Length: 116
Image 1 (cartoon, rainbow, N blue to C red):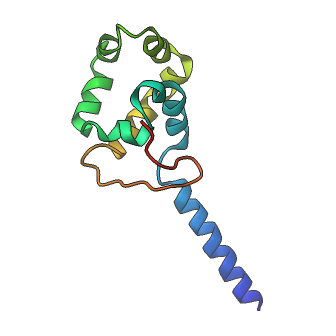
Image 2 (image 1 turned 135 degrees about the vertical axis):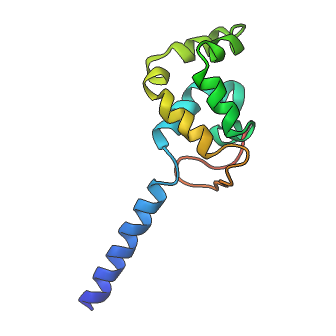
């Protein structure tokens, strides 16, 4: 009986750690907070372009600001400390979930559905 309980505990812990590593939840929540009002859900936004385009937009100095220059709310989001602090993590999130990444995320505790 004790062996079965230990086996169940190990299975549960393994399942939770796998689920926690599907994507970066800090990046997801930052994008939800700063970008969803214009771009839709983070996964929807990530799928709009491929990884090369995400790298181009994030790594070309001033490119994100130029794209959002007519939108004061967007510029404020790009200048926010949470965006600056997590910029690399957000880029990785977008690349990992981009157009040709093969990632298909369903419902979980952080995200469910595509509202855009």
